[in-house]
Image (cartoon, rainbow, N blue to C red; front, side, top):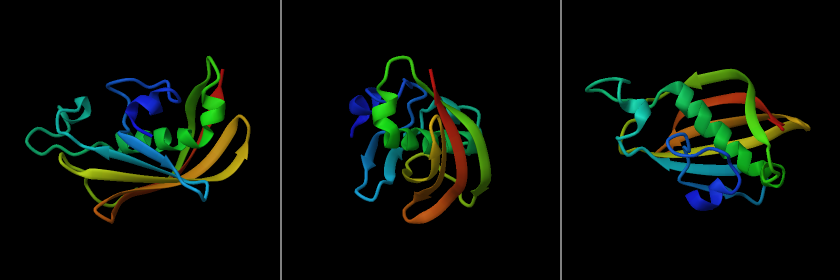
Length: 139
């Protein structure tokens, strides 16, 4: 699924749409991809002469990838996915301009409208971030 197809599911738009592509895997997981171009708003002051993708942006990338798992619920008019929690989030490596990010997410529990998931972000096979998170799909 490319950016235009992602927009039919997610309410996010530039500059907050943080996925270039996402795949819904046969095992029920989702894999998202994003190439850090270097001109993103979140790099402008984080940090001058040494830009790295902020952790909060990495968490948002994970959440956006997860929403693809709920495409059927997300396509309903007026729904919004909102974070309800983050847990056990760990940052293990810096993500910089030019990096190709791979985001993997897996559903752990669901009780609509609440969903609990786990995820991992990597660059070139090296884990950069992992964590558990929850969100609600609300109207």
